Image (cartoon, rainbow, N blue to C red; front, side, top):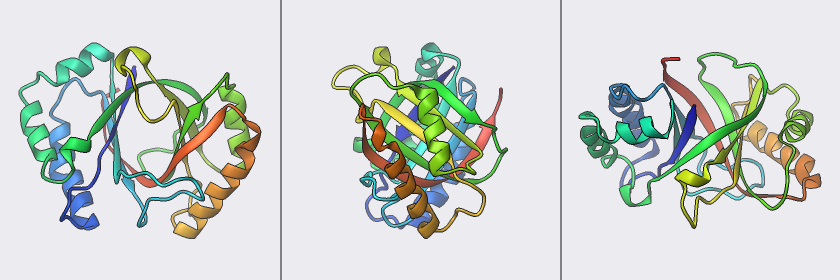
Length: 220
């Protein structure tokens, strides 16, 4: 299974409320019409800069995630008759020129899927210079965010991301503990995570994203 992240920047002139509402419906409903997509969720940025702790902010406002059986199905989706209207609709609420897709391979996971949600969540993007024990990394994350129900890692597929490649080498996703919806609690979790991961010298955080995960469909 291939997990593809898309990074979308809000279109100029739209309010946050307009951006998030249009993305949910009609765009989310239209996405479900592409049969090649096995699973789809939306990560809606939270707060003015979607900041997570002291991590550098990221320029995007939303991160949709699409699962396909493989890269072939991802390419076939763009040939489906429902793709042109979906792409056209996207141009109504995000900056098309800044849209980026990053196909990834899922890595280590820890915990249990807490269900349909929605869930408050953090995404942390890293540059990696050296070997990283993914399982050990996730164990360290549990020390910073001990009641997180689930966390997982994904890395860009080299074959699907030609040079210069995406802005990150690894993404860590953490579903935050229940009751962690406030910006103050998210900031505290983010700072604890930064402090805990300093021992991983091969990792350089390049961005943090605080969001609300909303699951649109799952055909698995």
